Length: 64
Image (cartoon, rainbow, N blue to C red; front, side, top):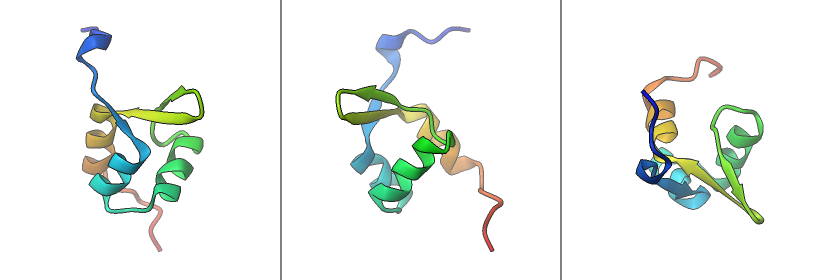
């Protein structure tokens, strides 16, 4: 089941940080670590909303 690119909603790093209740730097780290997929537009990144929802649902096990 392929998702049409026009159906994908992209969020800015600031929007993702607000949704996840973390700093923008944390979002950048997640993007660079490959934990969040992102598309680069010029000097900024856009993250698919579905990837953010998935990251929020799956708890990270590296705490502590």
